[in-house]
Image (cartoon, rainbow, N blue to C red):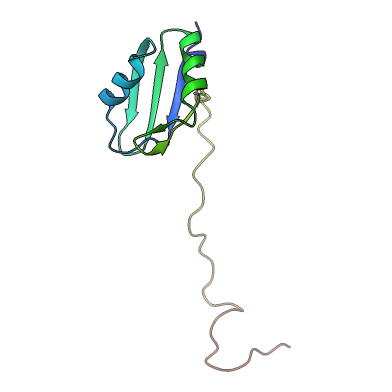
Length: 113
């Protein structure tokens, strides 16, 4: 059984909701394997016991209001696994000479020669 077909992403959750609250709410209707709440993020990943339960939950819960917020529910996507460590990051200050054509010239107009 592919975990991707049984694992749902829950977004836009109220920050006060606990993992136990979410588990209690969902287990009233569906069989669950695992609930992981990222505290303070309003996001959870829930693995259901079957693909049918996951599909049913997605259909019934996406857009449903829970604690004043409309949940976003969709199938979770596995992170691509790669041993390639080259990508990401970057940015930062590139340095370079100070001043240049855009520096303040103390009230004088730039000279174009």
